[in-house]
Length: 284
Image 1 (cartoon, rainbow, N blue to C red):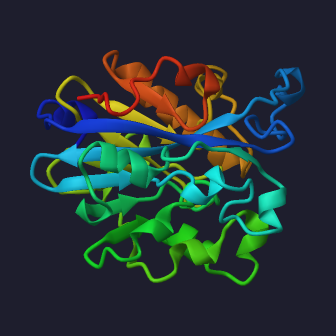
Image 2 (tube, rainbow, N blue to C red):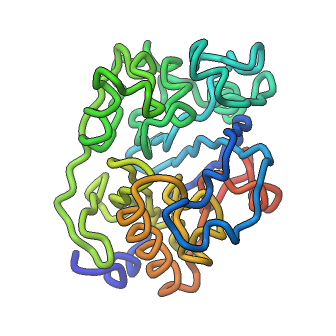
């Protein structure tokens, strides 16, 4: 497979369920990078930010989860499973039964039906509900190798990682055998051109985005490479390592601009939330 035009000529009847699991907020305008000269001109924003888990149903490979969203414990107390230190640094809000397990159940899917999970990165809100899957012995969890090493490092907590979220799970490093412009590192996850993992570092060193080659047109999930539509519109990345984050934002914008039928779902965009088709509705 040489390019995106070739890939998109053969789509797959995927279903994408967008599951809104709650909200998070941290002080400071983390949605825009302070290293950018335009940072001070961007409006401050203290709104709560939606946290998602995305279910992809593949006609052959079954259930693939992209991130897990907030753990159900957040509906009972604000620190949830973030721990006493990090939990007090993050404002959260969640409703009972709206975690990934509750929403999967509404779709008639059990935790054991999920065969694979891809994590965009390991900042605490993205794998928070991963421990719910600890009894799923056939589950494989895929994370960028750099990200996995950082999360397991001695001082990972000070970068927003919580090692216990990964405990007891079969975590594997994503391999990127492809280069498809403008991305230098790409994985064809199932090997059939249906789900592509795009390496988009910057927000974290091992961040990835996902592109679904769906029947009604491609769907790009930026995750935290672009918290909001404004990140792509202004080519102004969120907090992280600025040069890499800027390159990732420009790559995502370049790809989405080339294909007019491409739908884009951002990482934490409260303005987009009201317009999304949330589960049990789905994209195809």
